[in-house]
Length: 114
Length: 114
Image (tube, rainbow over all chains, first blue to last red; front, top):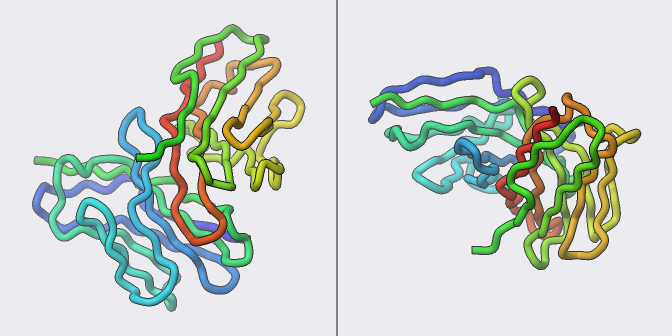
């Protein structure tokens, strides 16, 4: 069975500082990994994905994520946070043998203060 | 941009009434998902269709919930009879199995059962 853990319910950072939202996963074999963002009263929006290749993946809005196979992690990062980045972030994993069905983490609320 | 359309956006109903939520997936997407989001449980997968066939509805209370895809442009989630504990935001998402892409989520139906 595949699973995702987002160990922090809440992350607070000051605008302009770097941010990290953590995600660890468990899956058989090599994973597909995703990050989504949800703004208030909206559906989830796809941010970025890791399939294979470069461990550092770049996505929308200046976000990037680093895949670390030995630590089974896929942390979301941004060098300089904006107040508008405040939202709920979800990490998701998909087993390559279970094509199409992702398991989502519980979400991390990011608050960026001016 | 292609989008997943969900109707209605909001629904308030009395306990015991039937509720039907509709979703129009993105044309060409062959996988459709229904998720429920609550503060307590987070994002829960209710049902999953591939090429209109139900593949997994283990997350759905079978006695009152049903999900169907009468054609490739329409997915429905029905609750009969509804209960206050069904109050949540229900999201539809669509995606492709071939080629690893993120899902596209609709804006959700906010259901309140009183």
